[in-house]
Image (cartoon, rainbow, N blue to C red; front, side, top):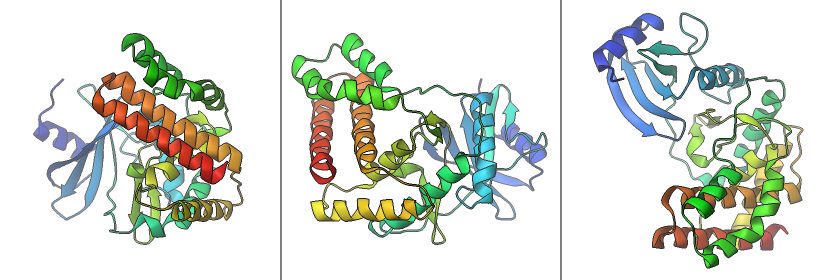
Length: 294
């Protein structure tokens, strides 16, 4: 249902007891939410996110109010109902403080990112949320890619040798994980590392979050030595939290993250020149990580 901006703003002002809101500016449209920047007449800035369900909103608020207390995530406003979201004409929204990203080189942040992730997993060990399914599971994407799009033998073979092992790895459950921790869900602000968008949070393997953050942060222009150094620094930072990352499990989950990405692209777009090239790049990355970490 279409909601006028004026109606939405009036609802937000009342529910969150905000001063006059000047307007909304689009920020991004992700897999789990649409985000817009909200600014009040007094200069306060917030991120308004439209979510897919109350279930997601409940999970995000439970995680965010714990992680914000540990300065791992931006503060999420509870609202009048103290449940962290507002419903306007059937649409679900939450509101959190906006953090202006610093312009930094990610190459200098691997130790800090690892430490922040260790802190996140420490908090999540003591957090309970309602069950959420893995909406982008490898099994679902692979079945869609192979049966609905009928990808060719060569492309199928290039990924198939990883599928069975990855499906087994994907079933490991340690505790609550972010589950979509690409570098796009990281904010560097005021010399700190913050994580955002817990819309896919579920039970899983802590190594999966580490794998996602590592592989999505790496540049293809870096040398093997640079990549190996960044992985080492990340692990050191993580272990400063008192937790451990096992080299073998980390490598397997890095492969899983990459294979999931390849199959998700094939499931959505089918076999094209662009998706075929993407899969070949993924296979090349897997070979590199096997060489460096195997």
